[in-house]
Length: 219
Image (cartoon, rainbow, N blue to C red; front, side, top):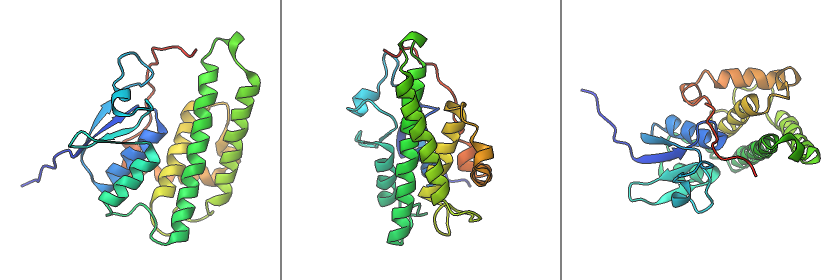
């Protein structure tokens, strides 16, 4: 008969979050059962601060009630506790290359968040120089990522799917959904093709970003 896998963890997540999506993809790729708990940490009554003193998602909630938070740390924690299949390259320089892509992609996503939050303010209160600063980070980070990812290679780092692919795919997905002012695909056709290939994987298809309603306004 079929073996029913018991959920080992809960993942506190926001559906549009690229950071939470990285963790959901890693859990899926490693075949780790988990319960998905969705909320918006900006909304009143959010439970996130009770699990992460920084009030940010995602948070991995362990069976004993302990928590692991911040997406890059959660991925590293999962790699230590669930090493197979490996998502971090074993070779040190390849591992550093994958981490570099993750740092770069997280930085682009951070800038998209800041640009988006500014765009949600009443128009008279928006800072155009602030938004322009974030736009420079987004576009510069994207260009650097395109330079670092090898053209005509199936994977973003090395010869296997891993951390670099998760970082690149989730960042491009967030760019699509949250920074529509940049038509990046004609500028980077190889990245566009890579994005489409990644989204043929079940882990990417199952974690497509879904908008959430933000009840609290941006001050």
